[in-house]
Image (cartoon, rainbow, N blue to C red; front, side):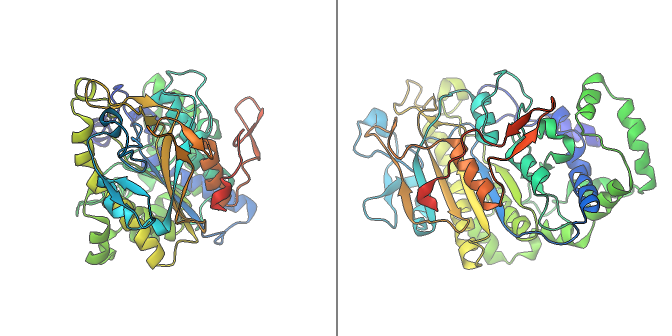
Amino acid sequence: MDTIDRMRHSIKSDYCDGVSRRSLIQAGLAGSFGLSMADLQRLQAAHGLSKDHGEHAVIYVFMGGGPTQHETYDPKPAAPAEYRGPFGVVRTTHAGIYFSEYMARQAQVTDRVSVIRSIQHNSGSHTSGTHYAQTGYYLREPNTKLNEMPNIGSVISRVRGANHPAMPPYVSLEGRLRYGDAAWLGGAHNAFTIDADVSQPTFKIPSVDLLEGISLDRLADRRKLLEGVDAKRRFYDRRGTADALDKFSRQAFETVSSGRVRTAFNLSKEDNKTRDLYGMSRFGQGLLLARRLAERGVPFISINSGGWDNHGAEVCGFTLEDSIKKRGPHFDQGIAGLVTDLYQRGLDQKILVVCMGEFGRTPKINQEAGRDHWGALMSILVSGGGLKVGQVIGASDSKGGYPIESPYRPENVLAMMYRHLGIDPAMTLQDANGRPRYLLEERAFIKELI
């Protein structure tokens, strides 16, 4: 099976609307060939930037599908059964504060996290809500699969670049985010995407795999190859995915096979105790890899935690209870392990962790033993970043449907990520029409965290 066939067979869906989170066309060859690094090196050469320029990083755990607040960080044990849900609760390190029983490990590190129980917005759409949570803007065309605004990782790539010249500025683990692309910033700022299971002993960086047995001279044939593909492929190339194969692109290929990059992606360098802390699941080891990348020069790492779209048996083929029992333990151990590891290593000032989905779930259990889309309320978790942790910010009503204290929006969370990386969310970038666009229209910080 050739590379294109392998990419095609990797496409799968984590949403009940049937839309794949991974698109073969959109992913293209940019992630595989690392052209974002080439563009970074080109910019560095143009502006005389060849040294490290900052060490802060963000690990963005995107809980695709929309996590339920009741079964994660805002349970309602005193509510009627149809609101309370199927699970019990566990005590956190704070008196009177509880998490769902399947978040038990995180409940023991709440002195090192902040949970915001009052995030809200106006969309119950997977597409528009996901675009909003990853860019700060709703979709104008609700059914499009393309980014209308750049993903926050692409903005960071364009504005800040990598923390180390050998590393990519934006890496996406567990596949491409649903709206993880650069839009009018150009394909050079798309994520360096890792789709494989990093927990497997056979895992290798895709770009290195592609390089094996292929000389750099033979890569000059890439342009001819791209000219022979279909019209859709050429359309995406015009958006910047297929960059010129100049000396900077050659340098990017060489960088991918460099010792620093190989070391960063090599989880065997970690001791077994640390790997066990995160859990040997695909998600847990992905978080460990995210930490390694963050401390070695990648300023923005996203990781998909999909499968939170829990309508119930008829729509999704499984109940909410079954889904949480399957997903909860791996997620819980991975996040608790990451938080513990960051603080033990003294990385809590440099690395910010954010766990967020596109919306929450309905306060009342539906007839299919699930919960439906609910933009009016969701909970998120934040850790590190030199922020004030050990607190619960905001509150919801007695049934977990609406904020009643300190309401915030996803843009405020994105603003905190920009702030951590020294980027002013009020800055503007010119879109494809030459019009200046703010990074965020709503850009107030979450004051309780500062």
